[in-house]
Length: 416
Image (tube, rainbow, N blue to C red; front, side):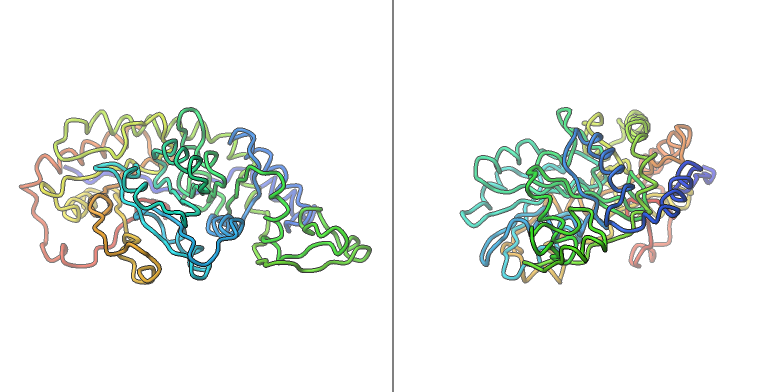
């Protein structure tokens, strides 16, 4: 086969975006204090999610950090997380001293959590469950939500990679008590940097803003100075104080100017990606030893076409090396399982358990591109090439030393 010519992913900035950025700069809208730009974005983002409260953040990690702070966890409390997720979902927990972490495995050949395993992990000390939607695929969130409601456990959705995932006509990030989003340059809504925290109780808005801006409040009302669109004149007349704990999670709103147009095109972007995923599925459906991580394509907002190889039939790195030779931007997981991450082990109560399903998914996942820059024709070329590689796997000749080296490849994201 000839080497394919596949376009690379990129952020597309339109003239309309530049106009919005220029408008913000001319108005001095460069801080979270009284930002009309952020108000406009949050209104649009709320409508996209189904009219849910949200506050803009520097990134998803800061949103997770504040969500955990709102729970007011105490020494000995437990938080359950998935064993395959990004470190950003774990790091905020480590800043809560003496909080125990438990990790949950997945169902066989699925990214759904193993419900029996989850129930066995829950004790009277379990205060929160954090779930992630990797690569824009659905999980069994309704079952998890039901368990949380029945047992009085808080549910935090790490929706960094799950913006637009829709389960039973409800968007990811709206099931739990808090939804945490990322708008990084390699996500579906590309703002370069940025994030959001959704919440359901109106009274929590002021508390979130206190955490977001150094615990600063008006001396008289004790409300956050951010919540009330403060100005220097307000400070002179009212004075301010500092209460509780707070952090400096301020940022410039300029990046969010890119979202004013982009958020209105999200449904179209997701629909196009689903069509590309459906094409991969139709071409690769009869390929032995290759399974799509979820057949529920209509519920996805996929960052990539996520396949899992049969490890008894294929060596993933061998397939990746051959695909790269043909010019295909393939990917696999670069980060390790949470249970195998050295910096996390001492905080994990059940790290010694075997997590066979998570390990299988992590070690055998193959990501194929779906980004906006590739066409349906590109997808067809890639799918047919991958099919050819797998069907003729035993005839592949590569330098075996490459299999023993640290291969450099994409990690499921394709932005260069």
